[in-house]
Amino acid sequence: MAGGNFDADVVVIGAGPGGYVAAIHAAQLGGKVMCVEKEFLGGTCLNLGCIPSKVWIASVERLNLVKHAGDLGVKVSGTPEADFDAMKARVEKIVKTQRGGVGMLFKKNGVEHVDGFASFVDINTIEVEKDGKKRKIAAKNFIIAGGSSVIHLPIEGLGKSAEENVWTSDDAVFAPFAPKSILVVGGGAVGVEFAYVFNGLGAKTTVVEMMPNLIPMFDEDLGVELGKQFKKQGIDVVLGATVERAVKTKNGWKCTVKGAAGTQEIEAQVVLLGVGRKSNTDGMNLEKIGVKLHERGIGVVNGKMQTNVPNIYAIGDVIGKIQLAHVASMEGIIASENCMGKDKLMDYKAVPNCVYTIPEIASVGLSEGEAKAQGYDVTIGTFNFRPNGKAMAAAEQDGFVKIVAEKKYGEVLGMSIVGPHATDLIHEGVAAVKLEATLDYMTDTIHAHPTFAEVILEAFETAAHGKSIHTL
Image (cartoon, rainbow, N blue to C red; front, side, top):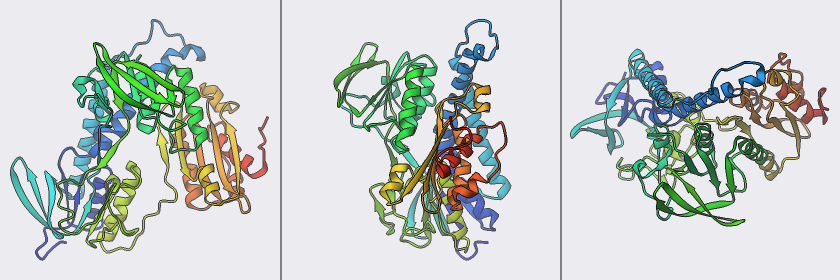
């Protein structure tokens, strides 16, 4: 298509999970598409976030399974050990393979990959610079998908490089060594996942979170349960506290942690900053062409993912709304459809949120507190994994499912899970929330036996009737 004075129908800036999906979808809709990326295809998620961190988690989980194989009657000779270098090599191999996969998808769908940094000349033109060379590209529409990057917290005394043993999540996924001890600042998704990994690799691990519970973006009950499981695993958790300052020592850092319980000194070889990201908008000349920004990134004015400049769209972390890869992908699909002349709106009602610790955490819709704050008269149903046959067989019995529903009509408002395969199981809740399903529909839905999913059915029954068949 394109034509006229335009080089493309759609130019996507950024090739992360929002950008590359947007580019491919626009091409599949018949558009001439270019995708500009200043670093690696796949963005932060594939190269420095979702994918490499999950590879580490899988290795540590497998190590722990072998260590406890005797509980299932499996004899293992010798003491299972972590091969840090082999684990790291596997991370690098998978990232490289996935990155190559994005490139192949671009070729298959006719998307031109343009290497370099993009800045706007006017609302229909960008200039892409790479190694001093510049190229101007004109397009009918642009989708900005520049993502976000980590920032260092302003903690007195901390250095800013991996050589000083102060790591961000970017550093941690390709850690130069397995630390003997680590202090993780932040008990959100990033912090708790790395705490699980490094604790599993043998580090004395401490998590400091300023809120009263771990994973504060989730239902309070999930954070409490994860805290209990972390304690069993030997991870120290300090809640309602902040790291005020740090002093370099011979073996790492001595950190002053202040909280409701007072002030304490915690020493660790490595400090991992597990919080803080900023939208990547610097140097793009967005304000010059009239695109409005806010404190968290680019302003989006409607559900079509348009900015205040109608032919410029923005998606993913760069808009500072919900910083999740799968949300960026859906926003990219919505934006690309609208760029290609369709009329489609983004729906944020049923967004799954996942944490990949062991046990896993997942939620969708409203938490109990959120539902009550919005004025709903709610009914709650919970059921534990402990009595479930599949959980017992697999020796994965920790955790529970929690359902939040509107009391009068039984509409499912939210689901939370802490337990085995929570990030896979949550999608039953996603469908229920998206379709505005009621408890009677869900309790009448047959669940296979024996499966972990039966716990979800039991939770639905408890929300509907106050108890399930298997309530003790």
